[in-house]
Image 1 (tube, rainbow, N blue to C red):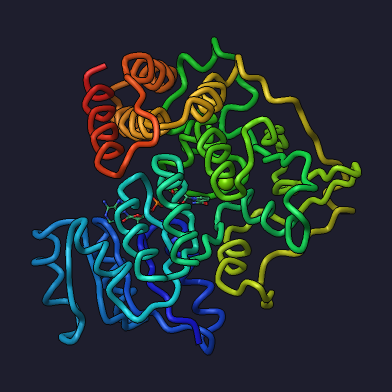
Image 2: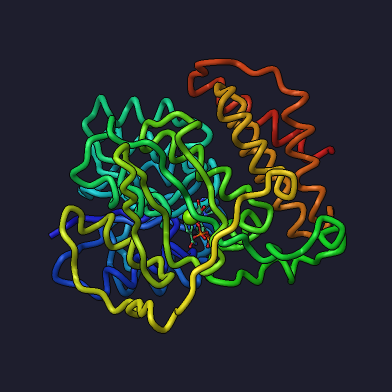
Length: 379
Ligand code: NAD
Ligand code: MG
């Protein structure tokens, strides 16, 4: 029986993680769960899964939900609450399904306690990859990827030797606007941006897919998960999202992982690893698919991907600023205060004003994150 804590239970990854638990009730027990502001759903989830510890975003929300929870549930809130649920239960595995660099302190706390991490929260590795991977190494904790591309690479590397890898390639669907020109992008709306062609995901990552920031974050995530230089990490546009990513070895062999797009498969693999369990995922019929398409990634069309490679190579606090400026810019786009193309302008300007610090400690990263958020609010 696996003991799980789930951070971000009400989101897209969170609810699909609970689907996986529901499909294998004999294999799991949920020790703790944390969410932000969707307390109605959280209350339902608590009654169904009976975790011992629960956290919500704020004290006010905690006061409001307290009467609706079973009496023996311990209730927390805020950043400290996330840490309590991630690190302070008997869970052996923590699913990090929160969005944004807000997941960093809880991830570090869980690793510190020796818990395995099923990691969906890519922003954590982007903002502080060196700290997270170093602590995981010290504590002998596995960082098991949930992101579909990284789960694919992880599966393709299974049993192989790292030094025999020539290149990994992350595939990208291209997001909601892949066929629009930059001129056409000037007038797109929030509603248009939220229509992803292949995946149903949270709002922030759906916008990130349209700007290609998501792929940028994933390139940096891959650098840390697989300990590869950026020169060995490629991106290929693949509109069908059937090949989830692939690895090319030095003998020219290419190993890819394929499937229909369903996040419950990589979520489950992160929880069942090294085993594979049955799943209800729709089976892939290549005969039915007929054709797969691929296109070279255009870094002029998608400047946010170019910026991710640039600041990934610079390292230090550059990636923290890239991530935090983007988080604010996306929130501003979603609330209607800036246009779609201003997201990339804000990231670029924040980066150009930032004095990068190399090998930052946690406090320096949090300062850079705060600084970038403040700058991105005013641009
Ligand atoms: P989402 O917006 O649907 O859900 C986010 C969850 O985090 C919610 O439960 C929300 O309540 C919680 N949350 C947000 N801020 C919080 C805070 N300050 N305190 C406590 N809880 C907070 O997002 P999502 O699409 O599920 O994505 C989650 C993470 O997984 C992101 O890092 C995303 O990049 C990554 N990811 C998502 C998908 C996908 O298919 N959705 C795929 C790959 C990777
Ligand atoms: Mg992905």
